[in-house]
Length: 290
Ligand code: GLU
Image 1 (cartoon, helix red, strand yellow):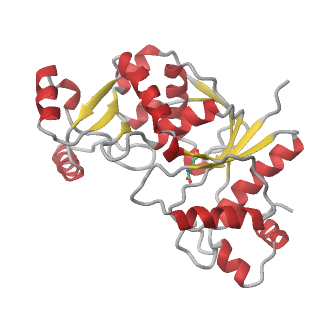
Image 2: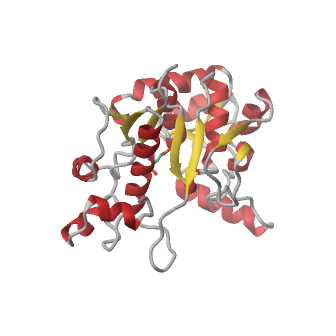
């Protein structure tokens, strides 16, 4: 039997806080108790927000917490060809189309739609894609691309869902409404999600699915804020013929006011806690992992 594989996958776009420590330590504990492997993955596809100094700080903070990971670390920015190959596969299935609206144009279209009644929002609260790029003719697409108009590549969600049966996943933790066990996936709730942007030739959803499969991740341990995203991940796994890991979504660490922690918050940042005298053991106690 292959040992189980776990991963902690932070984005280097800010400083790690108690919530990250909890997620990383839970992964580590699960790996230790199951004789599994612990991998670290740097999710740095967003070049506008990720910075090398945050990445260096991630290594330092995790080492300070007593976490050891396997080398080499997978840095997503070094594997764009892998995501491109997955995108090509989805394109070959006829499930991808270019959408040319700018962010401002999308906001305007949503406002127009909302003037006529409620417009659906995805589980994160963002309006679903309101455009009609899916029905542009091949000639119109070619003309826009040739003219240099920037575009994003979107998943044709209706066609994608039509290719697969009802999807589920195995939830070992729990969702925001205590969902656990065999959970039905509802990718349609996300609409035509973006798979790649002009400036970033992949997306969070696509890279996470490709990497979890390539790295043989068998149990994904991550925060409940990504519970609903799992529906999109299951769909992409199915379309790409990749295996489904099991999922363990964990509670989020909140501040005294009950708010989700922000990367900029000083009171819960690992650096600041450490400077104020915290120890790895006291961090474990703070997040309830005695
Ligand atoms: N990179 C994501 C984050 O920092 C986590 C991705 C995942 O665990 O699936 O929120």
